[in-house]
Image (cartoon, rainbow, N blue to C red):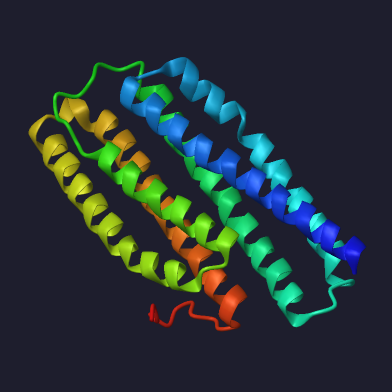
Length: 218
């Protein structure tokens, strides 16, 4: 049991290290987008392989631990961790997409239109951080509380798309730049979706209740 507990603790630490890399990738990708930093965008894109390798490591360790887990709660933890890892890998993918858009936009003249992408990024990152905190502390109430925040992200993303669509109609020369910003905003919206997925896994881990697709947050 002691050996298993040590392996499980190492497993959780690996997942949390992966989470730290994913969060950092999003923050740096958004920074590259906002500050028009071409070099930072290229760097974020190049480091996506690190997160991919973490997902492989988590999966391989999880498969090994599944055959040793003595309790149902341990099995739920391992299963939830695998799904959280998948979501974190996709968060990394979305960070890479944002970095790609930042790289392209850095080589174009800035838009005169100011859209609230930093606010969208802040909401998405808050959701991601809170979902991971709920996992670390195994707090299903906190996980349930953040799930409705996804609606705020969706609404702001729609507003950004509406502003950019109006800009493209008004000035056709800005179409490519506006489309790049739309892609970046959509990636942030998807990051919030992945944070919501992680929160749902925390509820499953702590309460043995699958609330996916049910709309249950209480």
